[in-house]
Amino acid sequence: MLKLCKKCENYHPITNFSKKTKNKDGLQDYCKSCNKIDNHKFRILKPDYKQEWDTKNPGVQSKIFRNWCKNNPEKLKEIQQRHINSWGAGVYEIKNIVTGERYIGASKKLRIRYTEHFTGNEKISNKNLQASIKHYGKKLFEFKILEKIADTNLLLKRERYWIGKEKPEYNIYLYHQQ
Image 1 (tube, rainbow, N blue to C red):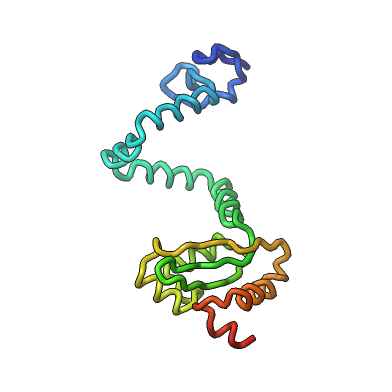
Image 2 (cartoon, one colour):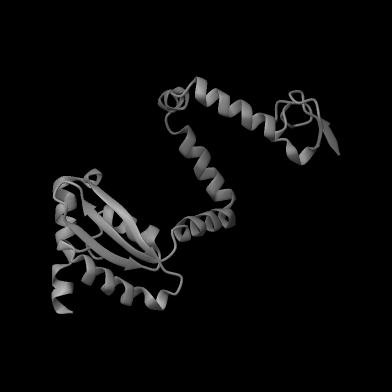
């Protein structure tokens, strides 16, 4: 079944139209492509609109999101997994941009490790690094991926290589042992 887009004046399959319950046919007047262009223009013209709307309507967005999560658990898991795995595995460096001190680590899931370091998970993170992050604040640290590694069996070997090469201050105990 086809529908006419009132913007581009082309006929498209009804799957190319978003839902709009107020319309008789239950679909938007513009196709998804035209809608996307209009939305982009609107965001450029009114960059503060969303923040102002959220301030005037507290909790509405989170309620909508909670309902979506409740109604779409499979999609939510898929999105979360894709997000977690998006950075892959590798060796990374965290640098204090004030003092220049560095920490080098490795992880199969870099995205998760990044979060663990910067949310104060002391079970996972180096104690000296954690103390420094608390003292200076997260914004004064930069996280950089030194090397992406497809074969996770090489992670420890590559981490040791980078620690030996760079001699990062927060890893002082590790490179003196080698």
